[in-house]
Length: 108
Image (cartoon, one colour):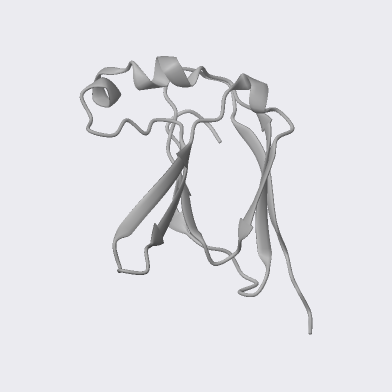
């Protein structure tokens, strides 16, 4: 992904399987991203984050955010394919954020 690019909320198919993301290159410092004017004044600064969005058993919407940094190179995160997730844009680097994502299907 280039600077300012993002992935809107989505989930993956196969519906029974797992999805994963492997971070290869993170070209920014999350602290610098959170220090930008649009982040520092936000209730929940999310620049550059990877985030899950889900409902509780009572129907409340909850999120779980990750702030990958340069040390995350090679880190793998696996999750249910139907779990909604999104990736926020980054602003402080002209290099690419590189990740690999995919799905693992369970066959009956």
